[in-house]
Image (cartoon, rainbow over all chains, first blue to last red; front, side, top):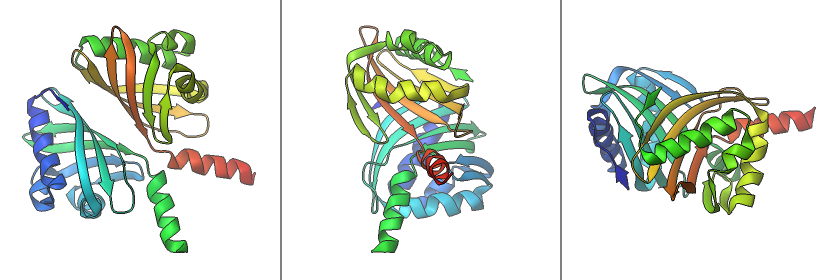
Length: 125
Length: 125
């Protein structure tokens, strides 16, 4: 784990520790009402849309490992690995923008392919 | 673009500029012969395996935009967006480890789903 703390990283790590620690409501306190999240499936506008995306993912999380956290005053990047109920070893990266102590922008990158495959297998099963 | 230069970031940016600038052979000069790359499809051991993975991707690249570059002495994270011939807006993140001026470790994260969909669409003709 490599960690280079700045103010944006502090906020992002607090958010990260909350949702990976299964306190999603605490995690949401770091999310701006006006957050714009660019996710693999498209753009999510606002905290409610973000909650609908990240909440279900947080619920299927069984393990997480922070790999890297870097940032400056306003932006940060987190890289982490996860295990989830349907998919093991599902790493992700987040590029975050922070303003007034809240996450206002998030670009999240992960591979949907194994999740799609798990869904197809479950539907066929 | 947010850039926080360290020695690992310098090497990674040089590698990044080379392959996104369509000089893949120059890019390979930053890759250690013993590189271990964790890609979405699995682990690639050694520069030849890495070349077989990244070379074809570099060839279909039509646009790239560096979003973030952070690092410390030995590790770095790059986040960038790309357009490729089959898929537009295909962002990626790389967590890299550098030793003796060469990239010895790379975890690359991107979404295979749109590439899989493009391949299926092309096969369906």
